[in-house]
Each structure stands twice: as structure tokens, then as C-alpha cells.
Image 1 (cartoon, rainbow, N blue to C red):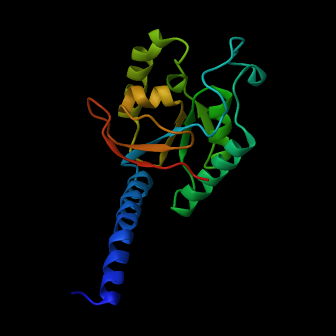
Image 2: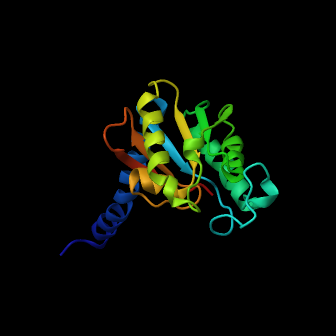
Length: 191
């Protein structure tokens, strides 16, 4: 029979090991991003609701679903975490939807460039195939250099990677992009 102290130590090590593995996996993802060997696909931060209102207009944030105060804090926390991981500046691209643009700006990692291939096709699924192909072309042409951050919508990320994401979650894909996106891993939402 094992002594009580040894059992406690064994139980503790079993409980802690998965956290270490998750930490190591995330560190590898941040390394790949820092080195330009991967791109981060970010689902915009918390914006209550689903889809967009019937009166949606791309040029009017008041006619869109927007970030909540919690979403703004989530986006700022994401930027702080990325900087803490050595990603102080990045090439940042965003959907033209206000909730994505605001998320991208609140990351505070550099100038934000609009990329229509990242726009939501939730209300018009006929655009899914063309936009996903355009996004794949963009990623294939991305030079391996500064970190690459793309802020978009759950539906776009799922079409490209097969991964459904929560608000503020990141999926990291390998660069250069092959025939399909190769998912290296996910980074959970920041709070």
C-alpha cells in the first residue's frame, strides 16, 4: 500500500499534467504566430444576439449587432495577452462588420485593414464558397513575416477550418496554406 503523502503527490501530478500540456500547446501556437508560420483567425468578441438585424447596413454601425461592454473588455484582454506572448505588432485584417472592426482595433496590434473575404455570409450562404476561396487565396499569398491576425465571424471560420468558435476564441492555421487549412490548435477566449 502506498503512503498517504505519495498518493497525494501522485493525484496532484495527474491533475496538473493536463494544464501543463495545454500550456505547452498554446506556447507552440504563439511561437508559430510570432514566427509567421501561422495565422490567427479570431472570432469577434462578445456581441449579443445572432446574425444581423433585418435593417443591416454595412456603413451604419447602429444598424448592426455590436460588441457589448464585456465584448470590448474581452477584445482588450486578447490584445494584452497577445502582447504578453511577444506579439506586440501584427498585420491585422478584419471583416467590414462593425463588431469585427472594433474587436480588431481594440487588440491594439497595428493598423486594421478591411478584407471583404472576411465579411459574414450568414444571411447569404450563396457567397460562402466564393468568399472561402478568396480567403484561402489571400492566406496562400501571405508572406511569412509579421504575425497575421484575421478578425471575422464564426460562420467564415467554420467554412475554412471546420471549427466552430466561441466569441473571442482563436483558431491557428499553418502557413503556407495547402489545399485545405491545417489547424494547429485553438486558443480559448480571453476574459
